[in-house]
Amino acid sequence: MQKLAIQGGYRLNGEVQISGAKNAALPIMCASLLTADELHLSNLPDMHDVKTMVMLLQQMGVRVDSSVQAATFNAAKVDKLEAPYDMVKTMRAAILVLGPLLTRFGEARVSLPGGCAIGSRPVDLHIKGLQAMGAEIHIEHGYIHATAKRLHGAHICFDLISVTGTENLMMAAVLADGITVLENAAREPEVVDLAHCLIAMGAKIEGAGSDKITIAGVEKLHGASYAVMPDRIESGTFLVAAAATGGHITLTGARADTLDSVLDKLRETGAKIEVAGDRISLSMSGRPKAVNVRTAPYPAFPTDMQAQFMALNCIAEGSSIVIETIFENRFMHVQELQRLGASIEVEGNTAVIQGCPQLEGATVMATDLRASASLVIAGMVSQGETIVDRIYHLDRGYEHIEAKLSALGAKIRRTN
Ligand code: UD1
Image (cartoon, protein in one colour):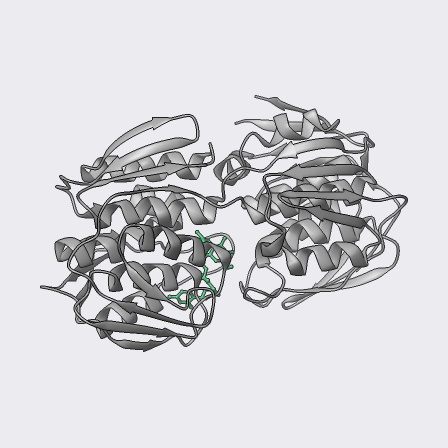
C-alpha cells in the first residue's frame, strides 16, 4: 500500500494550477447517458474517481475516447443498465447514473451504496423523488431496481439538502414529460455547473444556484462540448496548506466566487488574500489565528473543508470550535491528528481545539478523502517526518497532490 512521507517545517511558495472539480466532473460525465450524441468534456481532473466513472460508463456500453484532461463520451449504444456493487461501494457518486438511465432507457439497476466512512449516507431522497416522477422502485438483493415507461414532471421538496440528490433528480427531469420543480434544492456551484452542461445539451432548466430549480422536460438532448469548473475544494486545500505553513502561494485557474466562506475564514486566520481574475493569492506571516468553523450547505462553510481547517487550528494561536452539521461521523481525522500531538476534544458533532505552536511527526492513517488532506497539511507543520498511510483515499479526489505540493516547496514523497 502506498504512503506519503512528509518532512515538516517547509513553507509553501509559488504558483499552482487548479484542476477541474471532481464533484462537477462526476455528475457531468453521467449526463452523457442522456443523449445518443457525443459529449466532449474538457478540464477533467486526472484522479481515481474520474477513472472509476469512465470504467462504469464503459461497462454500460458508453464509448469513451480520452486524452489528457479531456474525453468524448458516446452513449448511442448502452446495453447494460446497471451500476454494480463493486463500483458503487468505492465511489458513492456512481448513484448519479440512476436518474439518467431511468429517464432515457426506462430502467436502471444501481447498487445501494451501503455504509461509508463518514456516516450512513442514505439515498432515500433520490428514491422518493424518482417515485414522485412516476418510477416504480424495488429494493432487491442490495440493488435499487427502478422502472418507468416515461417519467413525468413533479413538484418535489427535499426534506434535507442533498447535492447528488438534486443532481440525480435534475438529470431525470430533463427528459421527463412536463415540468419538475425541485424545492430546497442544493445551491452548490457543482449543481450549477451540471445545469450549464445540461442546458448546452438542450435541456430547459431555470433557477440552478437557488433553492428552487424548475426543469421543463424535452423529448431528447443533443451533444455538446463543455469545460468542467475548477475545483473549489482543491483550491481551498492549497490555500489552507499555505496559511498553515506561513507561506505565499498563488492559485491559477481558480474561481474565487465559489469560495467566499472559505476565503472569509482564511482572512480571519490573518492571511492576506488577493483575487485577480482566475488567480487567488494568499500570504501569511507568522502563526495563523484559530478560527471557529460550522459546516452547512452552500453558500455556508463546506463540510469538505472541515478537516483541513481542523489541521490549521491545531497549530494556530488560540482555541477554536469546529461543528460538523452535514455528516454524523466526520471526525475520524481527530484521532490521527492527536497522534501528531494535537489537542482536540470531541463531544458529539463538536470539536474543541487548543492550538499549539507545532505538531510532532508520526505515522498516521488516512480514513477518507478530505481527512487525508488534513493529515498532509498537519504533516507539513509537524517537526520531523510524518508518514500518511492508505493514501488511496487521497488519490481518489486530488490530482497529483504530492507533485503539486513538491513544486511549491513541500518535502513530500510517495513510498510503497
Ligand atoms: C456531496 C459531495 C460530497 C460533499 C457532500 C456535502 C459529490 C460527489 N459529493 O455528497 O463531497 O461532502 O455533497 O456537501 O458531489 N442524505 C439523506 N438522504 C439522501 C441523501 C442525503 O439523508 O437521500 C443526507 C446525507 O446522509 C448527509 C446530507 O444528507 O447527511 C447531505 O448529503 P448529500 O448532499 O447528499 O451528500 P452527497 O451528495 O453524497
